[in-house]
Image 1 (cartoon, one colour):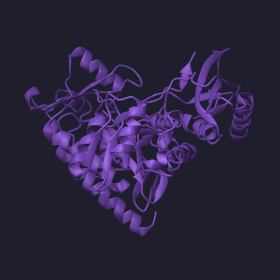
Image 2 (tube, rainbow, N blue to C red; image 1 turned 45 degrees about the horizontal axis):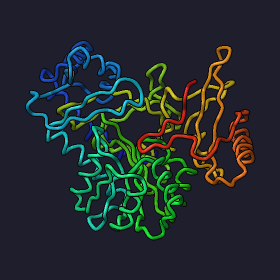
Image 3 (cartoon, rainbow, N blue to C red; image 1 turned 90 degrees about the horizontal axis):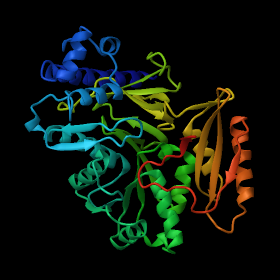
Image 4 (cartoon, rainbow, N blue to C red; image 1 turned 135 degrees about the vertical axis):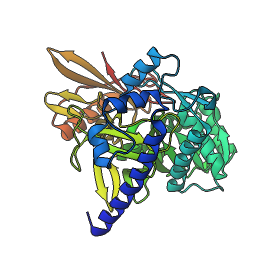
Length: 423
């Protein structure tokens, strides 16, 4: 790290430490959940440094929060204020485990929106843009944040809930949307529907697609496929969770790298098995502390997301974005298969509309096979499968059986796609 980088890093950590001390003072004794955890660890609000915080404060896990909500229904004890102060209820998407309910006060909600405004600004969105949010609005946090933050920025906001994919495409074109918010999978699905409906996306004004919910936004081949489907629109990645909010966004000067919003979060990267920090450039699990969500915070929350940390000019980056989930990595004949690496190979093969990875256990060993669906009925499906199998072998030195299925066989997703399945 350069001298300038060290100075920047020191300034970042000094600001984080000041906010952390304020947070801890607000939590004890008001927040029953964290008061118990901190007192059991012998930690007070007067913690002496960030290093001491990391060494002495225990991790928070999703299972722990779920058990607390079961023991103290319906919202648990991770609440810093009386219930009357809370005005928002959201819920996790249950990608893994039991859904969590999450409450926010107006102050905490404003803090979350400030983070999403930073995402838009980093992406180059201005008040002149029209933003289309391509989700059916439900209890999930990100949809509401994305919409309201765009409104706060002064954008014309266009809701896409309750519409078919074809109707959404027509609304995007007819209303002159310049920015589309959706998952990477759904951006590809909309492109597929446009071809089926013979809608020419050159008629759309979409110049920017902000994606989240999956790792595809930082996978080069997936980004290229989305851009190709949308007439060269720029793809901008972002990552967040209901439990933490909008924690990272694509570095404007480093595509396929995520920057941590370090004014709002303390980020750590640990070895999943030991909880010890990983070295720069090594893959580990992301741990986050929310510094401004006073009403329902998390301290040292194990997100389950795998990242590869880098420090550049004093900034913490994640090379390749979110690489997958800690519980999604499959070891096949001694080779670690990360979902993002597999997707990058498959999406680079022209003509693949969708795919699915099936994981089985044979003689105490994991095995995988992959199904691919061609984008065109007239395509040579067998040749497509052979090409994917060849490229996977070249990338991983591993033979992975690949079979083709008929067009329309594999499920499409509006939200997070579930492509890795245990059978």
